[in-house]
Structure formats: C-alpha cells, structure tokens
Amino acid sequence: MPLGNVHGKHIVTIEGINQDELNPIQQAMVEESATQCGFCTPGFVMSLAGFCLSKNAATIQNAHAAIDGNICRCTGYKSIERAAARVAQLLESRTNEVPTQFVADRGILPGYFSTIEERLLGLSAHLNGELRNDFPLAERVGGGTDVYVQKHDALKESSILFLAEKASLKGIRQEGNTCDIGAASTVTDLMESPILQRYFPDFKAYTKLISSTPIRNLATIGGNLINASPIGDFTIVFLALDADITLNDGTQSRSLPLRDLYLGYKTLDRQPEEILEKITFDLPSPSSRFNFEKVSKRTHLDIASVNSAIQLLVDGNLITSVKLSAGGVAPIPRRLTNTEAFLTGKPLTEAVILEATQVAQTDIAPISDARGTEAYKRLLLSQLIKAHFIKLFPELKVESLLAQ
Ligand SMILES: Cc1cc2nc3c(=O)[nH]c(=O)nc-3n(C[C@H](O)[C@H](O)[C@H](O)COP(=O)(O)OP(=O)(O)OC[C@H]3O[C@@H](n4cnc5c(N)ncnc54)[C@H](O)[C@@H]3O)c2cc1C
Image 1 (cartoon, protein in one colour):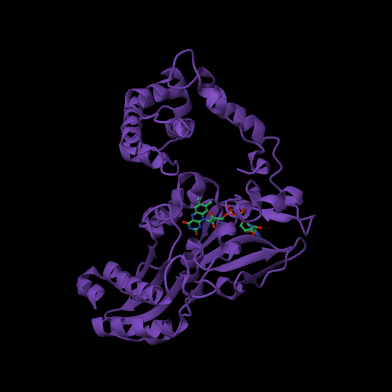
Image 2 (cartoon, helix red, strand yellow; image 1 turned 90 degrees about the vertical axis):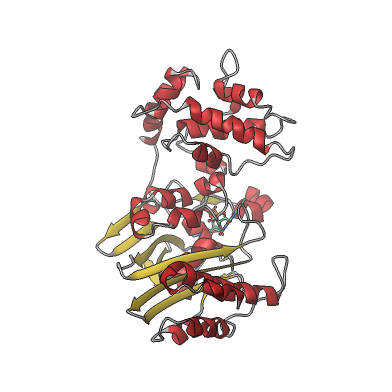
C-alpha cells in the first residue's frame, strides 16, 4: 500500500495483535501445523485477524476468502485452511455485537480493539477529502496496485497526487435509472454495493474472478479504466454497460463515452492533468440481461487471456439490442461493433449464435503472447460468446454449442 494511502488510517502490524500468550488465531495456526517455514505466516494471521474484525458472516467460506490473496510456497494450504476454519468457529457465537468489541471481549485480539472505531472517527475528522488538482503533472495514484508495479522506481522521484481517500471521488449512487460510481471506489466497495447487487445478482461471482481480497481492497475502478490494459476486467464490464466517464482538469469537467477513451495501445483521449472523477451508466431494465466471462490460465488470481461482457435486450425471441465487449483480442479493450450489428434484430437461435462467433472474428486483431496464440484467443472469444448465451438463456438448451 502506498504510504500516501494510509493517511487517516490506523495501522496494526503483527506485533500489534500479540498478547501475553499466542492469541487464538496464532494458536489455531500452530495446532493445525499451518506454520511451515513461517515466512508467510504473519500475513495469514493478519488476514485472519482482518476477517475477525470484518462484518462478514463467520462462515468457513468467508474465512477462506479472507486469505485468498496470501500465498504459501510450502504446500501448507490444507493445514492453513483448517486453521482458518477454527478461526471461523471462534466467531460462531457472534450475533449483533460489533466485531471489534466481540474480539476484544473474547480475547481473540487485544483489548484496545474495542476503541478502534472511535479512534478512526477521530482521525477522519482531520482528513481533507476535497480533491485539489493543483499539480497538473503529478502522477495520479488510486490504489497503486498497477502503477507501483509498473513504475516503482520512477515514482520515488515523482510528485504524487493520492486519490484513493478523496471523498468527492468515492461512493456508488443511484439517481432514478442512472448509477454513478466515484472513480476512487474500490473493487470491494463495488462488491458490497447494495445497488450493484440488486441490479447484477451475479456481480460478486464476477468479481471473485478478479484479483484477490487484498488487491480488491485497494484497487480502484478509476485505476482499472485509466490503466488502459487491453484485458482490464472492469473496463470490459463497463464497456458492455455503455458507460460514460467524467474527466476533470482542475477547472472544468467533460464527459465522453468510455468506448471513445481508448485510442490505441495505452493511448487515451485524456490529458495528463485530467482526473477521472466518475463513471455513469444506465441501470439495466428488468428485461435486460447481463453477463461477464473470463478465461485465464488459472481460474483464480490470474489476469485474463480473453474476457468478455454482454448486455442484451430481447423481445420474445428477437434480439433488440446488444452491447458486447471483449479484452485480450486487440491493442485496446473494445466493443465488438460488427457482432453487435449482426445480432441486432436477429432471432435467438443456435445458428445465429454460431454465425455471431464468426462475425466476431472480423472485430478483433489478437496477437500471440504469453497468454496464448492468436488462434487460441480467437477460439476463446468464440467460446465466451457462446458461454454468454448458454448462461443467459438456459431455456434455449444450447450447451452443445460449446462443442461446435
Ligand atoms: C496481484 C495483482 C492482481 C491483479 N489482478 C487483476 C485482475 O484480475 N483483473 C484486472 O483487471 N486487473 C488486475 N490487476 C491490476 C490492477 O489491480 C487493476 O487494474 C486495478 O483496478 C488498478 O487500480 P488502482 O487504483 O490500483 O490503479 P493505480 O495503480 O493507482 O493506477 C493505475 C493507472 O491509473 C491512473 N489513475 C488511477 N486513478 C486515476 C484517476 N481517478 N484519474 C486519473 N488517473 C488515474 C494512474 O495514474 C495509473 O496510470 C492486478 C494487480 C495485481 C498487483
């Protein structure tokens, strides 16, 4: 985490959860022989401490999810999973108690945790959430999960504008049928948003395919879009939602469709001084259907070889509107406009879906690289388009499409 992003936060290190004896989380790790070489152990203990402090239900699944970004290289996962399950059991009797109070009262974590919420409020009173854009050429940093990987050394010398805690860039709001997402909202904010959960019931399932809990807690949606990666997962989602973005150069704002932002590989219709403020899109109507698919070398903790999203409106058996996006198949994340035009007005049949996968080949220009050959990526896109229809229209019973 970039230092600038800890402003207003209370940091707890592994030493900060020590008690006279091992605390119950550490004890669970010992009892399940989950410590192995010990290098990764403090990270696992801290992630499980984070789980104990979160409001997530105390289930074994949630305990496992809390450590999904921690890596052990001594083949200790099964024992670590068992330790995590024990930690979930420690919380079983929690009902409506505030988690910080519960862990302090039960001696799971030191007593000072009972005052943490109050102390955090005290800190936030001194935070300046206003966005100032006085340094037009300062490097912008959201969660820093990409830029600090790409430009680690250069950033040591740069002036930096930290955006992650700017109140004016936070929040997910609904007004009528429109949704606004502040660019500094994190992936976790999106996963926990009641608005997104209501309109996209599978949203959590999509996001579980995207990075890991620690990265999702930091990574902002603005960073994903401005990063301009040809396989940025949220970029693909918001392209299919036909989102608009708002950029601000410090004096004025302008809006443009997200699909017009990407001009060429990592080249944007954006001036260096412009900050992405928010993303705006129309919430889907009850008759609209949306799906996101991603293929990577591993199911979890991996970037996409190819990803795709679709938003469809169907009237009876007729497709009346299609927004289809794909990543990993061109220098930019893009909408597949030929395929969209082909599908619009067509009946929903197996033959039409198969022909659409052919038309899609005219929309793309993949290259062979570490994530697959050109031919493989073309095949993947075809399969993902079929997967959209299989998932969205189970009544069509077109699962056999995947073999064609
Ligand atoms: C272990 C790991 C796993 C990952 N897995 C995935 C994955 O599965 N899918 C995926 O899509 N990505 C993945 N990423 C990439 C990255 O986490 C995401 O792209 C993330 O959304 C970037 O957001 P950020 O806030 O960290 O961006 P930053 O690193 O802070 O910034 C990225 C770029 O955007 C600019 N920027 C950020 N915010 C703004 C703003 N508001 N206005 C103007 N410019 C801005 C920065 O200047 C920089 O150029 C992964 C990264 C890591 C380290």
